[in-house]
Amino acid sequence: MSSVLGVDSQPRIFLGVWINWSKGNVLGSTLTVTQTNGALLVAFVALFITFAGTRLWRISCFFLHRGYSASGPQDGIYHQRQAVLKNSDNATAGLISCHFDMGFNAPSEKRFLYRRTTLCAPLVTEGYKGFRNFSESGAKSSYAQYSYGATLSSSDTQGNVTYIYPQLSVTDMFGKNKSRTNIPEYTLGYSYANVINGSLAHNRAFTPIDQLYRSDADVSVFFLSSNQVISPVAIEDPWYSAHQEIPGFHLNFTGWHNLTLGGYFGDEPAAVLGCAKQYQICYPDKGGKPSQCSRFGGKQELYWLLTSLTQNEEQLNRTRWSIMSALTGNELDGFVQTLGAASLTSRYSLVSGIQGPLPDNQWQVDVEHWHAATMVAIQGSAVDAASGPSNPDMRKFWAAPSNDQERSVCNNQTDSSAFYEGSTPEIRIRG
Image (cartoon, rainbow, N blue to C red; front, side, top):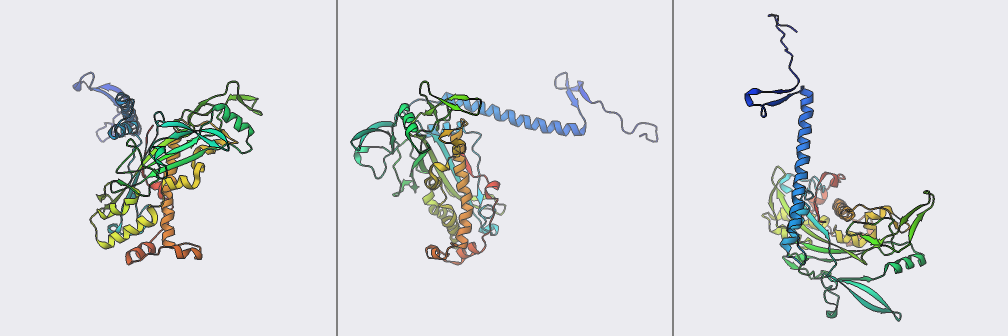
């Protein structure tokens, strides 16, 4: 197109690399591209910088983690620092809204926010494991004892023993596997210690040793036994670790060109995983952001955490009902207690006692599954509390709302089925 002066009104622009000499040979290096390609280049550079920066931070954290690592027992600050360095890219914060996520339909001044954090890690057993013989029907059997804190039901002679499980050699495992009619399966045990106002709750299952004790968090330990489950390849995941072999023994897969693989058994009678869980209640401002929050604490002190916030009686009644009806009963411990080994996602590839290959972070996959399932259950509990039991015979056991605020919560309950997809409760995992 030409102007009235005969000059091209849309001059051609050079595309490519050129040097703006007013800035010199280095700083003046310039790339000119079309508007479309420029948008793509900006997007790519932003993505590349984000990726490169994240990798650099992870590499830095790795060397810091290795540099600070020390053998032998350490204090809580040491483990907290190592956990932060190890999980620098996994600590995603998340507050869930009673309105948007849990379905309590209410204006902004009547809402609250809830946060649960879960920090887990496989625990070392060296120095915390012993063996003891027990007589059964006149025969002595060896058991492994794991000492992470005495159970309330244990005697003084048992010391800090938390869990015991039969100790079998790899040959015994193979022998029992051949003679058993039942298909080999995992066993999952657990114990827990809740806190109230900085002290251990009376209804705890065990008293954690100092290395595990937290005055501001509930602590649980999970014990995984693979029993006679066999893997055709070694398992490197620290909770499922399996490297024990029987010389000359292999697994033969007919129909797969007579494929022959090794057979690996679990390294521990009961591998141990520890978790610390914290809870927090916040009240939001009109924009939905937290304006005042309680300290972090244990599950059984949620009500006391709530009362530490500035509020009127109506606000207290509404939030207390929501906490008691939806939040307190949906926990990792209860999920594992109810489902046992069925709560493990590793079982998706467990066929006839043979465990398919597992990733090196399978324990993290399991914990994330537990966490997600229990968070989703909060939504169902909120709806159930509002509607009451569907079985008329069970309604006599149902605690109905007792004041106007509690009845208002029930009458305004919605079913937000997209709860977990739209929220990001915090879960941190340690390797």
